[in-house]
Length: 332
Image 1 (cartoon, rainbow, N blue to C red):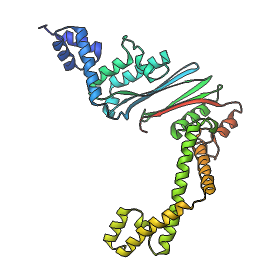
Image 2 (image 1 turned 180 degrees about the horizontal axis):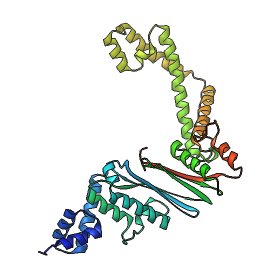
Image 3 (image 1 turned 90 degrees about the horizontal axis):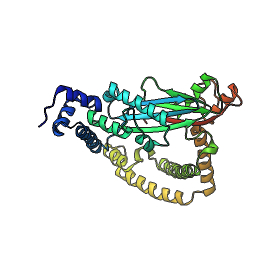
Image 4 (image 1 turned 30 degrees about the vertical axis):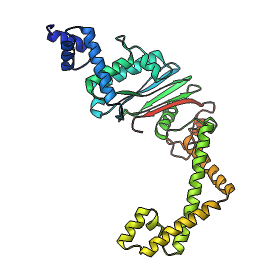
């Protein structure tokens, strides 16, 4: 059996950033072979990650980098705020952002394959740190923007929310910051209504149709209940009917009458809803969604006056346009 010295442990710790006892135990298991010891520590990281695969990584750090007309936004997640505040985690997150900016990979999987400063892949480095902390780590988000002018916003208080806003030209910095903050706070789904996918529009319309039908049916049921002298709030679910009957707020007869009204009036109203009216209301709801969820149409949050984002931009620079954005929040 090899004689494991304190110097050997320190050497392995520098190679892997693992804890002192983890390094010592790995060297003992590897009989002093440093490469085997490194592999053991990595495997430990994999095992920890596998055991904690279903854990949420809602803590961590969001970072950005901008170089010329390119920018990246990356979020490294962990399980607890305690780990997120450690120097080791923050150094790893900073290194990850540097590697992402240097390589400008296409997606998260490509980023994982990128090499860190020590020659190891991003994925391997995360595995080693996972083994060291005993917590699941993951690249929660990676996005990139290419544009003539880019502004990055990171929420300083938490470090868990960030956004990139790309413009077609250099714009006033205060405006650029305001737009990036708008993206971060309001989480738009697209720059403009025209850029919203047909799939999303179809989905929103389907939801809006069902919501409209449900509301019209419920309105008819409530009217019938009130006509019968029954408070609709007392019978809005079977659990409430039973509870309110037990409390004496409903008689058993009223409870049964309410159940019958809910069933018969609901079925009758659902069968007689005018399709044209339902679709008209649903289309209105989709338009409201587009106004509230697309960047250009949203109310600009950084202005005291009620003005849309597109009008706020035009007010400062008529030629300026947002051409891309990215956003991530570890708290969502």
